[in-house]
Length: 308
Image 1 (cartoon, helix red, strand yellow):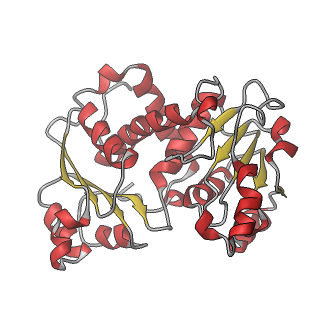
Image 2: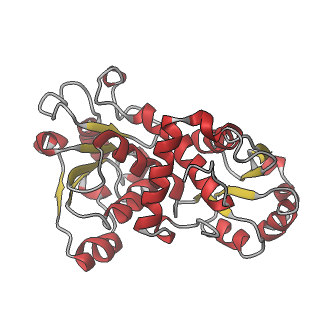
């Protein structure tokens, strides 16, 4: 695994190996404290980030490595007009691995073409966010004990949400996944996703507008924000916005072992009163992000704790 640009770059076997390694790290983190000693991660973040950047940095530090980098384009030579390719070439002389977030789709791929160290896409525009997909898969595996035979509801902005698109594609390679897509008509999943994933692979799916209609069926609900700016008029937004706020009342018919996921940041689409419900997994999900990134860094650098 030289670079990770798109979640589909990984085979199912590679994903399962990463999840297995992350599980071992969760169980015995002390065993991995020195595996990246003297290794350096460069975090090249050309746009703001909280969870992704800090979890990458925490992951490398917990592996005994070091971190260098920047958290905005304004604090890098990009503000002087330096190209992504040139920045990557320079940083490759200072670090062993790069994690890059960029507002332009394809920028991490461009960087990967000019360096001889691994590049991880930490989010490129509205295109891909592979480590969030890995985080979601690890969360599902930890909470459910499997990645097959599950009914998952995706709720909210399914048209523009890159995390939703990536997770749908990743889960399509596992058996027995039932998809229920909960959104207003204006924010349904794109046609290309229906054709490339569901129709091409013969995977059934349902589209509904109210989460209450299907809540009792779900093993997992993956929440996203319904964004005012995506609507053509304010009246449609006002009509629909409260339908996609998950609160305790909407959870009354849900399974006792439902898992509530959200890639965060949250605005108002999950009531804060849900936070104390044992089914709420989104803060654990953010924590799992550190462990899967630890496993990914180890794998891409070819280091181990000699456990085998």
